[in-house]
Image (cartoon, rainbow, N blue to C red; front, side, top):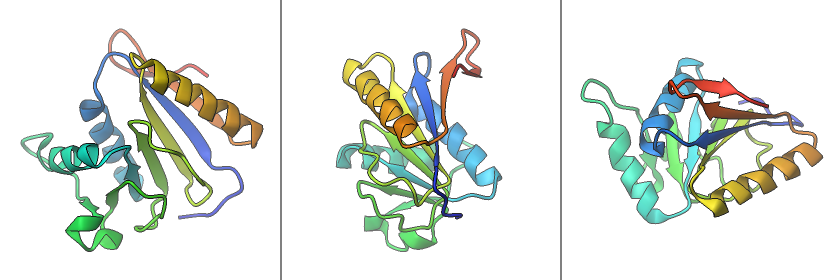
Amino acid sequence: MAQQDHTEIWFYHLERAPLESVLPELLEKTLAKGWRAQVRVGTQERLEALNTHLWTYRPDSFLPHGALQDGYVSDQPISLTLEEENVNQANALFLVDGAVPGDVTNFDRCITIFDGKDDMAVQGARDFWTHAKAKGNPVTYWQQSDRGKWEKKA
């Protein structure tokens, strides 16, 4: 994990696919890059659901991960958490379900995934975009096309 002045901030606007199908795909790409990931969630219930889902999302594969209650989370390539501490020295921070960004400077990239059907989530993403740009972070906005491919829009 490289510490830098301006963490890249990427925004993924969910409109056609749920978090449960998008997050594993993005985590796979992160691991393929040789990076570690932290998934910060908004609630304990979501953490537990994702903890189960990442083991079973595909019959022929799983994503190696852990949460604090599982133990050895610092050794895991993907950590699930409610906290801001970067316990597994992740390169990429994933924010889901309204998780608070906090200090993102300990990450190379911060990926905010928000539900386009949730007005509070959209407003939270807009506020984070404004804040990140004002701090000089490079920001990128991704939206799904009608065919389900992610397209860079801004």
